[in-house]
Image (cartoon, rainbow, N blue to C red; front, side, top):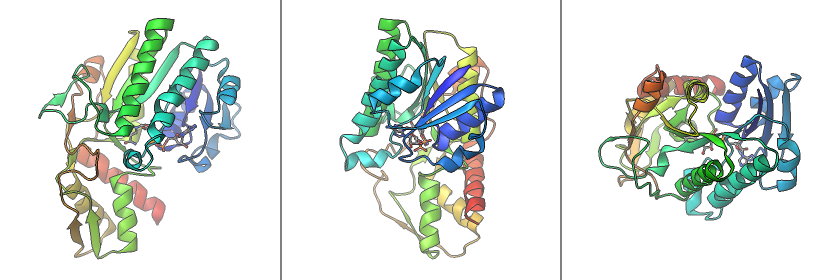
Length: 313
Ligand code: NAD
C-alpha cells in the first residue's frame, strides 16, 4: 500500500509512520513542521520506502504534485492545541476544513478514494452522564478546534456521498505517550521543572477524561481500517476508564519523586474556555469489531509520564 500521511512528523503521525513502515508499506509524509519535528521520522530518511515532503497543506500546488499515485491518505495534520482558538479564531478553520478540503479535492483529481481521518471526542461537546456512542447527536462543539474537526468530518462524508470516496473517521479520546508535545502531562512536567515546589492546575482538578496510549491508538486505527468496509466507518477510539486531572498531577509528582508539592487550582470546572470537563466515549463499536485497548486510562497516563521523564533525563 502507498500511504500519504499528512502530519506524519507529529506525535501521533510519526507513530503511525513507524507502524506502516514496519508492515512494509510505502509512506510519504507531508508536514510543515509547525508542531512536528524531523527527529521523530529521521530513522526512516534512508529507507527507500519512505519520503518526506516539508510543505503546508494550504499550498495547493505542492499538495497536488505530491499526493499523486498513493492508495490511501491518512489525514492527521491539524492544529493540535484546542486552547489556541480563543486567541487565533481563523486557525482551526484554515488547519481544519480548508486543509481537509485541499486534501480531498486533490485526492478527487488524482483518483484516490480512501481517507483515514483523525477526529476528536470534542465534536460531542458536553453530553449527559453516558458513555457516548458514535450515533450521539446533535454534535454541537463548544471549541473552535471542535468545529474544525466536525467541519472536516462533514467534508469527508460529502466527498463519500458525491464522489464515491470511502472513509475511516476516528474520534480519539485524549492520546498520551512518547513524543507527546502538548497536553496536561507535558504541561505539568514543564511547570514542575520551573518550580518543583508548586504546581498550577487549570480548573478544579476534577476534569475527568479517558486517556489512550499512543501505540494502542494506532493499533486500533489500523485494525478498524482493515476490518471495517462500510463507505463511512465512524469509530470512537478510547478506553472504558478515565483519570482526573488531580490524579494525573499526583502521578507526575510520584514519578518525579518530588516531595511536598503544593497544588494551586485556578478554579472553575473547566481548564479553559471551550474545555469539556467530563466525557466518556463508548468503546462498544470497536469492541464489536474485535479491538479494545489493553491499558486502562490510569495505566496509559502512568506509562506516558515515565516515557516523557526518561526523555528529559
Ligand atoms: P501534532 O501537533 O504532534 O501533529 C500534527 C502534525 O501536523 C504536526 O507534525 C504539524 O507539523 C502538522 N501540521 C499542522 N498543520 C499542518 C499543515 N497546514 N500542513 C502540513 N502539516 C501540518 O499533534 P497530534 O497530537 O499528533 O495530533 C494529530 C492529530 O490527532 C490532529 O489532527 C489532532 O487534532 C488529532 N487529535 C489528537 C488528540 C491528542 O490527544 N493528541 C486527540 C484527538 C485528536
